[in-house]
Length: 422
Ligand code: FAD
Image (tube, rainbow, N blue to C red; front, side, top):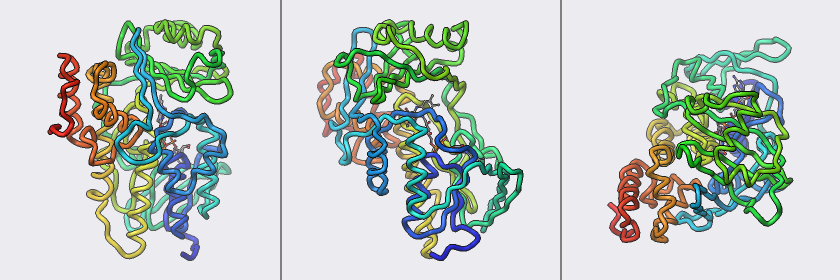
């Protein structure tokens, strides 16, 4: 495809969604211009990936670059609540695909992906903020450089991958309140000082507060003795903690004694950060000349580390549809982008809902689950939520998970015949 002054595709934001879309489209020969308002590497929260994310990076020819980043190998997740401990190894899943992934410092990881997009031929410009957009054919985009210059573009299509910037959602009045009640996270990196051999660094540890089962922590080890450590609570519970940022942080952690004891010699190596009210939604994922990717569309909750996986999957779907469009096709963005994407998002929504109403926690800690059910749940936790063959995926996931949770509660879940799941 000849490079013209107007790009085929203008991408807003060079996070995982934007870099993935740009890399895939550039590999197909299209001209792609990515506008990123920050300079990379920059800090981002969201360090625990899922196995399906690694599979998508492999399919997009970016896996070797990620591997060269020296990130922490990750093979699953462990859930701890009081004396209960449940492990999920991603390899124990029903959906084909990679059974491992990485725990990544996002500044470095996102920069690697953006550099990969450039290697494939995309142009990435840093320090440029999108300030206006008129949908249409073609759409018209305005941006501002750090020098204060205004530029306008009329690409064939715009992909909004601006994450929590939510650029088009705000500009085009697409915002819709999330159905989840507001929650907040307090987090930092710590020198964890966990003695070697006493803790599995190849898994994310999700800890549940003994006082309130809807308050939980993440511990995401990196390979250098540091970990990302964060706590999530409702905005009301969050306000209970008083003092300096450090005092509030360690106060929350101390409410989970097993975690506090694991980290008894730990100290922070980054300032404590907070995000309050992260759940977000939109009315539509597409319109004339544009589509929304990743967090620029919806964000559910961090508990199942689904954000980057959804970002990469949405970018993969959109790049495929644009390829068909540029070859003369007329794909339907509702039935071929929004609805297929939502199939997997609904799965995560079911799991997040079940986490906070505690029914999923009952399933996770049920001691005698059938091995096949364990593997189906594990596939979801590994990010393979778009596999229609897994009964716990898609629009039926809520009904099936509630039925499973009820059987766990009355102690009959081990009797489930997997072939009879309706
Ligand atoms: P982003 O990564 O946010 O990238 C968007 C980019 O767009 C940014 O670089 C930004 O500078 C740029 N931008 C914004 N506005 C503009 C503009 N107007 N013009 C130009 N550029 C712009 N996900 C996981 O997978 N695993 C986790 O463990 C995890 N933990 C989380 C913990 C918390 C507390 C929260 C809140 C989220 C967590 N997430 C996690 C979610 C994860 O951070 C996001 O889902 C992920 O970063 C989304 O990627 P993205 O590419 O859509 O957006």
